[in-house]
Image (cartoon, rainbow, N blue to C red; front, side, top):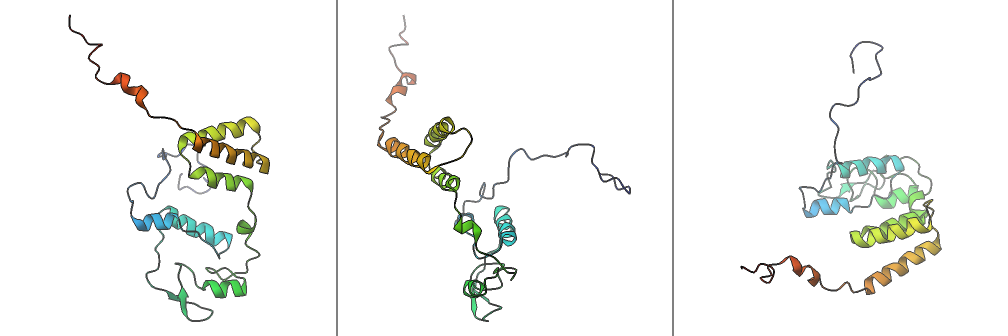
Amino acid sequence: MSTSRGNATRTRPQKHQNKSAYKNDLHDKTNKTKFLNNLDVTGVCKRCKDIIDWKIKYKKYKPLTAPRKCVGCEEKAIKYAYHILCTKCATKRNVCAKCNTAVEANEPETEKSPNVDLQAMLKGLPERKRRTIMRAINKTCGDGNMTPEILSQVEEMLKDMDNLDLGDDEDFDDFGSDDSDQSED
């Protein structure tokens, strides 16, 4: 972008573009990284949750080493970084534990759509089973709306796949060193 006044539009694309998304556990397989990736941020408003999730995603989150003093009850009860209220005070006052602003009800926890349940269920599956289930879902409902009937069908498919014996991979011995094919004449 030019530094001249009034030139606020860019005419060319970004020069350096990332080919893949940043992965915070690509070269760091420590227990701290695993713990942070599995950390569930609760008791805060949506904006603060997004901020803390960003810090975790890009390795900027620094967890507390010792409990901190709560602004509300003035006890050392804060166990999560970037919070100013302990969870007890935040729930009692119905405010965000990070920014201390009024929070309605926790919508993400009270409302769970079937798609979220399905994504959580598919996350722990091997790639082969995941793709099989996704093909079946796309065949039954192309619009992406999940109903409880479809979820029950997916659970049945999972049970059937677990009972299915794929056998040993002895069929691939054809590529081994077999002397019958290489006879010297």
